[in-house]
Length: 515
Picture: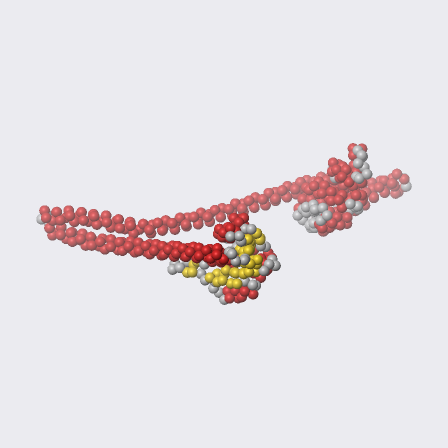
């Protein structure tokens, strides 16, 4: 795996510089940069960091001078070191992929010595790739290659010196060593060419492996998409079959009735024809027998028709019963609405009479517990801390009243929950769900909260509504018309926008109100 260039001044960059300084000293780094770093990149790094050489013409400087200055800065400045690493990683990207693709156990044989890597431009890039490899054993090969290079360079220089001095047998030995070194250099060039070809093969292998992986991912995604589409088609077919079955069952009784009536009409016609034939024909006995047979079939068809009519009547009775049940529920709801409106009118009239009484400066708080708990569970996966909520809503002010409207869904934990609310300072109002004959239930406190708020309208200056339900917008407008300051508190995820706009003060709850 090829490690990306770490960010400037990050922990990874500092560790990378420590690793590189263990591999390179100034001489070895300068040789690698001279062969591998492009002149354009060297000029750019030099111009960025040359504080006292702003007027210097870069074209007048040789590359060796640029690299020498940059090498010195590398060991003295983190900024220059970061720029050098970034440019070298970009320039040696291909070689880094090649080194990363070589198995660790094959690396010493293929790139682990100076003889295996000629110290030219591309081979200098390979030395940098070795130093940047994430495997410690492979990274250590960079130091070995550099040491081999300097050792052979020193041997060759010593041989050249002996030849120039001309000292007897040592001259002959030096000439021999020099010739061997030259032949070795030629062999190294050949090995380099072979390794270059091998590198191309490795690069192609890496590209093909990457392409195969991409194709496999695309195939997997296509297979998963196909499976999902097939599942959707199956579900749609099942749903269509259910609809067709229900339609067939609904029409079956009427179809049987129509068929029975058609058969009765047909048999009645046959009976009439047979009666005419019986009066005019001498074969009265045979006709009478057939008539009796047809009469028996007619009776059987009448029984079938009666059963069909009974089934149809039962279906009509069932539908009528359901209609009456629904109508009863509608009437009950209308009556409840009428009573609520009547009570609201009475309380509104009483509130008008009581407005002359001085209002309490304290805050009255009405808590829609079910709404707030549902938002906390769905959005945060946590429970509400009602004690912390009480203190946050109170905000150091006197509390006229704090009422929590709670629905009792049963269970042993409910009483303990009510005790928690009471200890936190809440007055608890409890409603049990109303169950209908069809098994459905209904339990909400919207009307109860509204009636409590109307009753408090003439008694307090501030009313806190703890809910995000947009159905309370008309209540908020009513309270504001009566001169009451309306504060709405809710988690943002469950807050209706129109209710938020209708409040005088909006308190967006956060994790501080959660357990």
